[in-house]
Image 1 (cartoon, protein in one colour):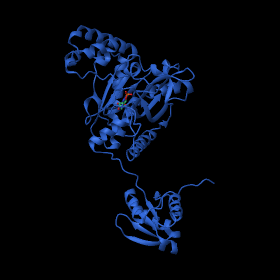
Image 2 (tube, rainbow, N blue to C red; image 1 turned 120 degrees about the vertical axis):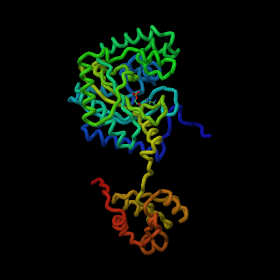
Image 3 (cartoon, rainbow, N blue to C red; image 1 turned 90 degrees about the vertical axis):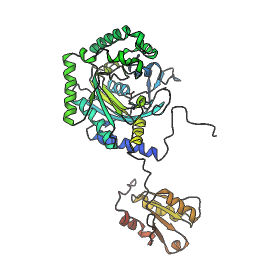
Image 4 (cartoon, rainbow, N blue to C red; image 1 turned 180 degrees about the horizontal axis):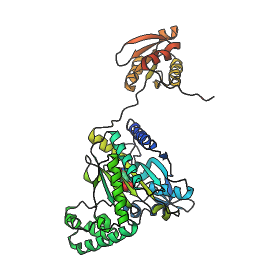
Length: 425
Ligand code: AMP
């Protein structure tokens, strides 16, 4: 046993899985950049106060924050999500609106580790600040939808709801609290505890004992103003126009306190019930103001990368492909021929690896096979003497002798053109 293992709730993402993460993030970037979103990289830690705005009734704030006092006596927290940091950045830099940004990176929550729930997990997401337009909500939602579709996922369901403006939501919470209080005796112990902290979260309970009290609970739609109802209707019309299928669920409240009006969640039907949300988001119109900025509309989502990949595994889509090398150079002379030839191929844009440590021909050929390269470039004493190399197609085992000076042209003819590396001037 080595002295150290990964800390609970964290994992090493090893190759080839790590390549799959990169590929996922690249696909996400491709989709959102085509809609005019630009990349933002917020810091991984901020003043604790930034994250307290997520809401003091949320588990994220009360139980899960990785916070500490640094050597300069600042109360710092590792980011548990990125929306609050992006809003802080907006309030600090006041960019031109609408400000459309996307991000990709890790977040930290002190949760009970289990499959699909980690203490360090990755999200990709978008935020748009400075617009109130319901059609923007529809655009944002459709980007997440397109992303799941591009990965090949078919079992993802979009659930939408509106929580109304802050005062409508507050009135609803009071009506809900009164209902739940009057049925306190019928609720599970856990829900009674949740009720005193955050009645909305009782609606999330999947416990059978709570089902009938929840089923008879007041509905948010009865508390929405005309303006909020028509905003929600416009979001749904936008989704219809974009061909994005959805289900309206008035019980969808989500775990963060800052949501106003539109909220949504993407649920994977192929994942286990308690950890099946692969992404979610909504409007958070008051958040920038809470962080000291001007009153600003905001809408966005975050998609959990870890869980999305679990959903891909469950559906058998978006495989982790290994790095496909073009060539592997085998050199059983002095090794310098491999140095020169590998460099020439790499400079011409062909991904190339080679062996080190003066290994035997047999061992180097094994490494070439294991590398998955399309071809092996072999230099033995005979080739070295004649400044040639043997190029072996590793799939068909066909091989030809090629002058070392003509290797790049030969590989180009076999594999097609690549973009040469640009060397510094
Ligand atoms: P949230 O910021 O809580 O709305 O989460 C957005 C998405 O991030 C969820 O739908 C999950 O896919 C993912 N997520 C949240 N917390 C975790 C966690 N502890 N481990 C893995 N994924 C998570």
